[in-house]
Image (cartoon, rainbow, N blue to C red):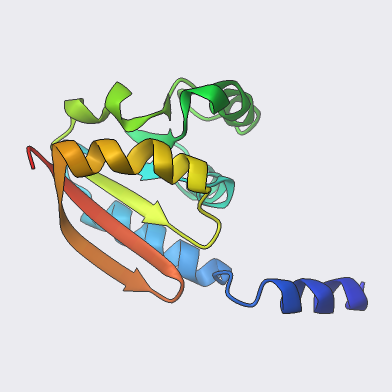
Length: 143
């Protein structure tokens, strides 16, 4: 066990501590207003959101259309309130005034690639909040 722990520690020194992810999620959910959506881009962020904020609405997994089945199965296992809340931003983001995005070292490049171009074209980045190894982005629609 010790050698596994040391191995993981040396392989993943830049991963966020659980406190950093908790802090980032707490920041988003205290700053969020009616008309806001949240997009997470990796399973660690999704799992933390599902565990700590199980009844929160308007949270999505930004993922390419090819990976929807995987995410819906994962969401169903976590008893997420609406497993249909997964997919590219263009499927849902227009319904909101602001979009919060959580980026961590775990962020899947495919998920960000499925989310970023649409946000950059249809919204403007109004805020970046950096925590150790985590970025919280806020996009306002109409940009």
